[in-house]
Length: 124
Image (cartoon, rainbow, N blue to C red):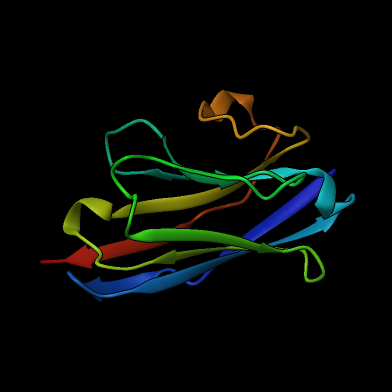
């Protein structure tokens, strides 16, 4: 079992920045690929980005490339999502997820463990 807890959400103006954290506990964090997803009201949960545990390769959704950065600190069992140049359409609940794989799945159904989510609201 892996427990995930997100933090760092909040209200920010368009163009601003936020950094989300996802702290993991339980089984070996280093063996899990970590994904970030978001869900806006009335919409499906969508892939934001993810980082592989084996080579730290990173994938991003096209909508966030160049604005968001994912990193992980295996010593701290934490993965981060640095968000810059935020837009109102980035608003939603942000979730981190974990899966014991070397690739970065983009389908949320592929992930085994989820955090409770943290709200990000970007005002125009």
